[in-house]
Image (cartoon, rainbow, N blue to C red):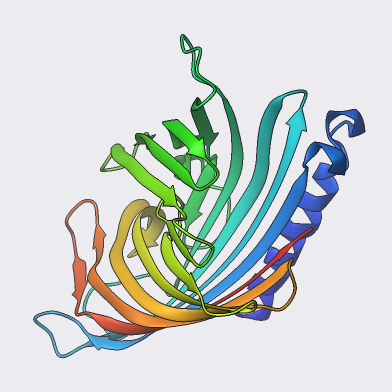
Length: 291
C-alpha cells in the first residue's frame, strides 16, 4: 500500500474514533459491556497464470476494520467501518484497474425474536452503506446499501446457529443465503463458521492456536475502462488455508496463515472482458486489538 493509501486509512480511523465521542455517554459504559476492536489484515496472492493465455496476475490486499459495540438500554448496537485496498499487478489483454478501493460503514443490532417467549431466539440486522471504486472518490452510482437479516438460536455461548439472507441492491447477485454455526465442544476446539472470516481453531497452549481459515469474495466495483466511467467490475474468489494465531496478551492477537485461492474471476458485468485466474498461493497476516 502506498503512502497516500495509508494516510487515507489513518484518516478514517481518526474520524471514526472522533465520531464515537459524539455518542451520548449515558448510552453506554464499560460496565455495560461496551467494547471496541481494531483489525488490520494484509494478504499477498502470489503470481499465477491466467486461463487460456500466457499472462500472469499478482494481487496484494490490505484491510482495516474497526468495530464498537455498545448497549442502549437493553439493545446491543454495533458501529464500525471497513476500508479495503487491492493492488492488481498484471500484464493482460483485458484492461483492469491497477487498484480497487472499498469503504463500508457497519450499523447493526440484535433483539429478541418477535412472537417468541423463548430467550434463546433473536433477530439480527446489519446495514453496510458502501462505496467500491477504483480511485476512492465518491461516485453516486457506486454508493450502495447492502444489508443482512438473520435469525439466531443461542443454546449457550458454546452453541449458536445463524440463518438468514444478505440483500445487495444493484448487485448482479442481489441475494445470498446466510447459514453458520458457532460451536465450542471443549476448551481447546472451536468452530466459528458464522462470521465474515470463518475458521476452525484448536488451542495448542495458552498463547498459541492452530487455525483453518475459509474465505469467499463476491464484490462489485464501479471503475473506469477505456476512459468510460460507471463500468461495473465483479471480483470473486474462494480461499482456504492453515496457520497459527499468537495471543500476545488477552487483548492483542496476531496470526499468520498460508493457503490457496480458487475459482478466481475478475470480469466486467457488461461481458466486455474477463480474467479467469488459475488457483494460487496466498499468505495472510492479521493483527487485532480489543479495548
